[in-house]
Image (cartoon, rainbow, N blue to C red; front, side, top):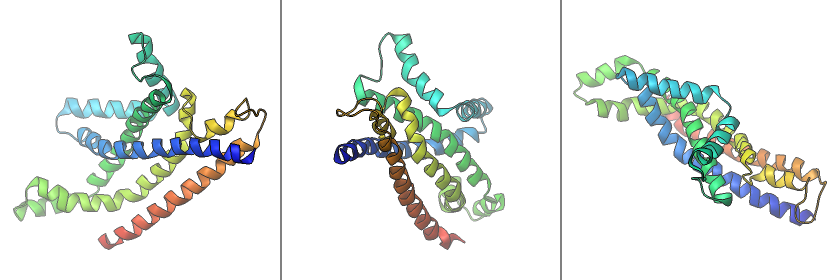
Length: 222
């Protein structure tokens, strides 16, 4: 029984890890693009971007998952995500990427605007282009400033992946909860669900350790 449960939880954890990785790979660069939109000098783009950020940050991720997964199918008459687990993963990944990109964008914006304007002016006086100033002056200092809040969001993402089970995505908690019903010939088992907490504690521990090392690597900016 134990090996059966662990095997099922391992499969669920791989799905959790995949969703976590894809979300970060998509949300980190997209968040930077969104932050540029929210700081744009073109007022319509700036206000449109900030409105989208406000909506995404102001509504539950679980609700966004449900709407994104079910509404297109209702409107089109078929699911654009495809059938089965791949379709649920695709919908989950897109919802998570959009959600976390909006949160990351505000962190990026704070980091960029936190760099003293005088340094940018000094760069212009030295003959640097605005592109050179951003990549050689602003970006490096922004990274140092955003690592702590970004680390907090990344740790939150580890736990938020469990929300994907609302559309039956078979992540680790879904796998543990399945043994409460009927899975692999077992039913009414509660301990596999509690055991999923071990996966999250270990996963979060590893992520926290890696982020801590990253912060130390960036200490040379101080």
